[in-house]
Length: 127
Image (cartoon, rainbow, N blue to C red):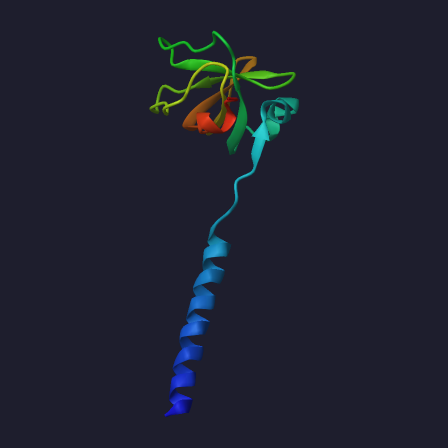
């Protein structure tokens, strides 16, 4: 009887270990780039979905065209949010992360956003 119980526990443990292993194999962590890293060589990222972070440029949100400019230290890129709803806390001067496709529009580059994430404002505001 004791052997049967140990066998069942080993069997359940092996299944749990296998499921955890499959979970880690199926989850591919997505690298988050800065605006400057992307704009150094945007051609390298144009065929993939990118996750990019930067600051929403002051006075750049255009609700008529559903675009804004995401700026880094040295570079900036236009973002289209026409196909998505913007999250609470989305405003000019705020650090955001944008997930979307990098597209070349003439001589300019544009991100067609699939998701925009903002940080919790209380984390970043000083008292």
